[in-house]
Structure formats: structure tokens, C-alpha cells
Length: 101
Length: 178
Image (cartoon, rainbow over all chains, first blue to last red; front, top):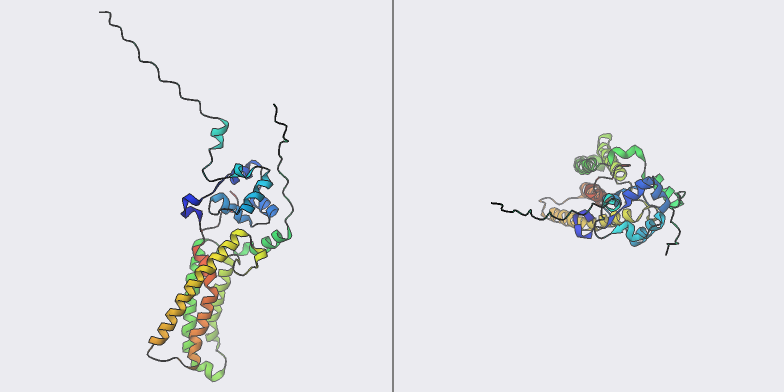
């Protein structure tokens, strides 16, 4: 069943980012793991949730902990993690109005 | 205290395993890419069902000729050829996921196949029930070669039902590379 139809069942992943970062094609990953290259595409698109075995294989392939690649909640944007937004400055105190009259 | 763990480096892409090679060879034939868009797959399903209807009608029309000669005429064979064309198109459109062995499928493809068989089972039950009721309710009892017009198309329909289920329900494939 497509995870897209059941939003709460979707497992989010960073496969597309990791693949682009390391300059790998879907075929490269698929060939290394013995799966169809389109399964990587379905995973990236969120149309398929991997088995635990496949998730662990992918984690080993990228030499990362599995929770760095897969998550039950959406990942924060990488750009926001690298360049966090500065905290908003505190509001300026109200100007004192003195009555010279 | 500094972190002394070695920085992990990604392993180089491995050579395709034997299983992966089989997968790539059997289900990535680019000559059939034109069949793999969802709209085309659905058109193939409609075409297959329509050609099956024509085939059933032709079997009924040529039943007497079959009984007399023992073999169908060229015109009688033509509808079956069209059915075969759509059947091959459907097999290729679904990348042979229903006909390849387990070892040639990955876990997602096996899931797609199992889901298709599950749906096809209920559809088969419904089709058999409808045909049984139609035969019971028909004013004329089929006899002799007229049964061929019922059983042969039904057999082909049930044979291709899981493939049609996959062709109809699966989303568009991901783009080649993005």
C-alpha cells in the first residue's frame, strides 16, 4: 500500500540528498544492494517504505546510522541545520515620553 | 575530549551481484519503455479486455466452422493474435513482475506482486460468480463448441488478471534520474 495514501505510515528519508552529495546514481546503489534501481526512486519519492533489512543495508552502504537516513518525522532542512537562522532580536523597549510642558 | 572515532567513508559502489545482474537484464529492457507510463498501461488493460470480448464473440461466431473443420480460419485466429499483442504489452509494461521468479525480484517488487495476487483472487471470485449466474440465467444452454467461447476467454482473463491489476493500480515509475 502506498505510504502516500497513509501519511502517518510514511517513513521519511534522506536518500536523495545523500545520493546527490556523494555523486551516486540510483543504479550504483541498486547494484551494490541487489535491488531494482527504481526501488531507490520509489523510496526517494516516498512511495515505498523499506524493510528493516533494506534500511540497515542502506545505512551500511552510506556508513551512517540508520536514524540519520530514515525517520518517522520529517527531517529538518540541511541548509537550516548548517546555517541556523539567527534568533530574533528582543523587542525594543517603548520610548519614554517626557512632558516638558 | 576529542572524538577519536574514525570518519566513516562511503564504500565504493560494488560490482553488481549475480542477482542484480539478472534483475537488470530481465526487467530493464528499454525497448518497452513506451508501455510503462500509467496511462499507457491502463490503455493496454482496456485494449486487452476489448480484444478479449472480440475473441469471445469470434469464437461464438466461428463455433460451427470449428466444429466442421477442427481448426479456425485465418479470420478466426486474428482476434487471438490481437489478444496476444496486448498480453505481451502488459507483461512488459509491468516489467514481468508477475512472471519473474522470487530471486529476480526485490522486496518492493515482491510486495507489488503479492498485492496483485491478493486483489486478483477476489476479482476472480467475482468473475466466476458472474459467469456462473449468467450461464444459469441464459435462455439457451451452451453446448459443444459454444463452451469454448466462455471458457477460453475466461481462462485468458483470469491468467492476466494479476498483471492487469498491477498495470492499473501502480503509480508512474520514478524518472530515470533526477
